[in-house]
Image 1: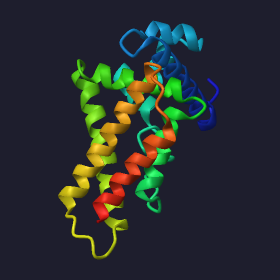
Image 2: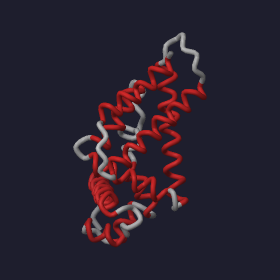
Image 3: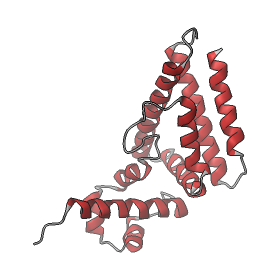
Length: 192
């Protein structure tokens, strides 16, 4: 049997993730079956399970890179405002409606699927802690806010972004620049 290159395996995995992202966005996470993924990808069930042991594992791969990371890492040089702008661009940019629908599906499904809820909470917590650390690290030296207030502010900002994604998924017209300015205004108030 001929060996398959790592590049080929990576490309097949990426193909499955892209098909899943599209189907989850269009049909919903709960309403997309592994059979749907087989039909849309042109792969066999065994091929898909070769890359992902479960649908939950595939869902986790689908949200990777849209969870605040860039190539699996958090950029350390980004300001809190830059982080918020980048996250907002996922749901307001050219493919924003699709990602907003996906985000709404993930959080909605997490409400009733414990395994997915665990993944969503874990990713959210890491992102929240990263944002809180960037808020702390970029504050004015004379600012008196403590670590708890940074975490609380990061939590509120991320909750607002999740809410924004849900509004965008439902077709509600929220102006991204106004939303971003409002969130950045919270950062400014925290500094005073």
